[in-house]
Image 1 (cartoon, rainbow, N blue to C red):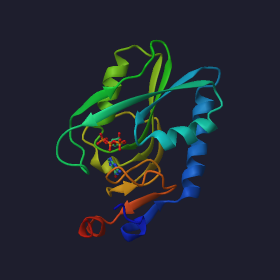
Image 2: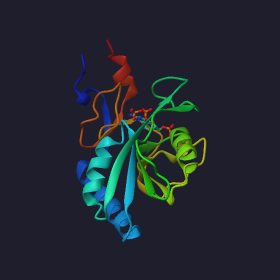
Image 3: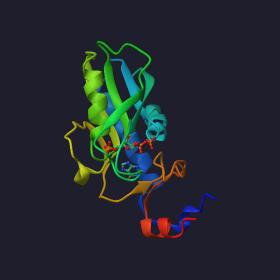
Length: 187
Ligand SMILES: O=P(O)(O)OC[C@H]1O[C@H](OP(=O)(O)OP(=O)(O)O)[C@H](O)[C@@H]1O
Ligand SMILES: Nc1nc2[nH]cnc2c(=O)[nH]1
């Protein structure tokens, strides 16, 4: 049974109000930076979906959207792993286009590093990263982040696209998981 998140919510790290305000700011910033141009927003599934759909409502320059999926291997569901493999590629030619990668969170950096390596070989006009959350303390490979919603501490978070064991992505805020309570009460 999927449990009520109140049973293991440590704290609300970013409220719905603060999230929405920051997403709107990022959208305005991107719109200013790309004025007169056309954009391609590439969302990395699945966590980035809520962020993408809110962000694009605040981007006033013309933009198309595409999706990629990456699977990582290794240590366990709540640890990043150092290896990432593209399992779903964009469905369009990105050559000479202005591309922004949209992510929910950058942790070790391996997911983004793999995607950036692949896409940069295809010679886009520009390639930038927009992430809602940056867990900078955990970085293992440097990745260039142009647009950043919030830098967050090294805690496991959920909500607004981010899952715990695939659930809770629908919550409108970012919460910290109290892992002792979550794992301790697991069936
Ligand atoms: O910087 P990294 O250490 O590579 O971690 C970041 C990645 O981890 C999460 O995806 P996850 O693999 O949990 O998939 P999901 O988005 O489908 O939940 C997140 O959405 C990023 O893509
Ligand atoms: N749900 C979730 N996924 C992540 N992937 C990397 N860090 C995190 C995190 O804190 N929460």
